[in-house]
Amino acid sequence: MASIDENILKAAKEIVVKFIECGRLSPSGFPETFQSTHRTVADTVKSHITPAATPPAGTSDPKPQNVGQKPPAGRR
Image (spheres, rainbow, N blue to C red):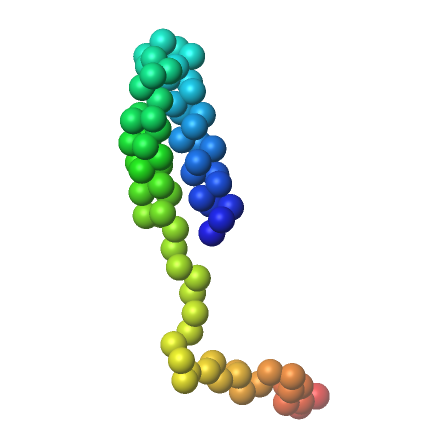
């Protein structure tokens, strides 16, 4: 999860820096805009993360019946 959080921080910083470079934001507005941008990016990213699929406890997948067995010989 640390990697995702680091990427969120980097993305939010880059977005706000681009706003400053384009003249849409003054450097004095960085803290407020960064917090808002970071929150938006984090909410968006984390809402699209799916939890790892884990089987319910106490259930196991039975093996198919014919795994590892040769098919029955037919007539020749």
